[in-house]
Length: 264
Length: 154
Image 1 (cartoon, rainbow over the protein chains, first blue to last red):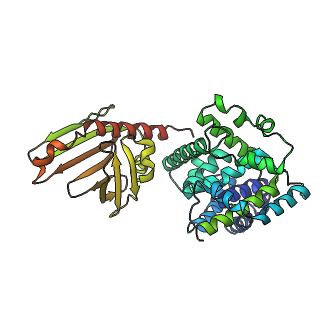
Image 2: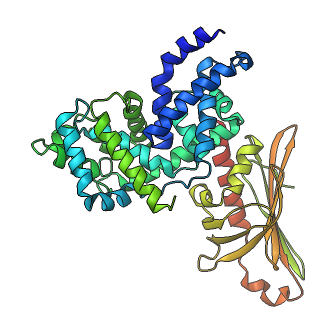
Image 3: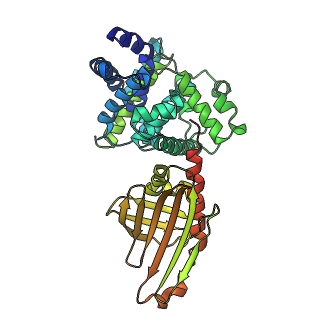
C-alpha cells in the first residue's frame, strides 16, 4: 500500500474514527489530537501493515492504543455522572448563557432529545472499565466483528466476547434503572428536562414518539431497548449532527466537572 | 469425580474436617471462565450464590465475600494461589476453596472444592450448613454464563 492509498482510505473513515475517539475520551481536543497522531503513525509504520486485517481495523488499532495510553492513568467516571454534572450545572450561570448563545446562533445548536440520548450514553459508558468500553463501542456502534476487535485490542476472541457480554449487561442494567424514557420508575429525566429549557414551546411527548426506543419502551425487552439505544448512536455523528455544537459544549462541561470531581 | 452436565456436589465428612467438591464440564474457552472467576465485582451479576464480593482477586490480595449461605456474615478471605486459567485458591484459617480448570480432550473441566476443618472442628461442625446445594448452583451458574458468552454472536 502506498502513502497516497493510505490517505485516501483514511479519509473514508476519518469521521468514524474521530467520533469513536470522542466517545472514548469525551474530549474534542483529545479526539482531534489522537486522529492526527494516528494518521502520522499509520503513515510512518505503513511498511509494517501486512494486510492481515483491513486497513480500517489496523488504523483503529493504532488509535485505540493511543487512547489507552492517554486514559490508562485516568480514573473512570461514576455511573451517576449525569446526576453529578446536573448538580454542578444548576449553579453555573455561564454554562447556560453559552448554551443559549449556541442555541440561538449556531447552525448546529438545536436541542434534540435523540442527540441527548447519545450524549448521555457517551458519559455513562465511561463508567465501564476501559477495555470493556472500547470493545462495546467497536462492536455495538462501529460494527466491528469480534475477530476484528480482538485484532484492534490485542485480545483473544474469547476475552472480547467476555468484555462485550459484561459491558452490555452492565449498560442495560444502568439504563433500565436510570432512564425514564424506557422505564417509568427511571430516576433520570434530563433529556426531557433540557428539552423544556431549550425548546420551551415544544411538547416533549410529541418528540418522544418520534424516538423508537421511547415509543416502544413498554413492548420491548431490555435487550431490544439497548439495541435501539445503540442504533441512535450508530446514526449520529457527534461532530456533524444538527445539535453537535450544543452537545459538544455540554460534553466539555461534563468532562471538566468529572476531572474536578475525580481530582485529576 | 463427578463430571456431569448438571453438577452434583459430593461431601466427604471426617472427624476433623469436611470437604465438598463439585465438577462440571464447560464448553467455553478457559479465559472466559477465568475472567468470570476473577472479576470480583461482577460475581453477583451471574452467580446467584454470591450476594457481594469486594476487593481484587489477585495473588496475595484480600477479598470480602457475602454468600447466600449466610447473608449476615462477611467472610474475609485471602487469595492464596493464583495461576491464570488453571488454579485459584482463596480462604482463611478455617479452610480453603480451590477452583481448578483442566483442559482435556473432552473439553474444559471445572472443579471447585472446599475443605474446612481443624482440631476444634467437631465442636462446631453441626453449626455449619451443607455446601452441596450452593456448590451445585455455583457450578451451574458458571457453566451457563460461560457457555452463553462463548456462544455469543460474532
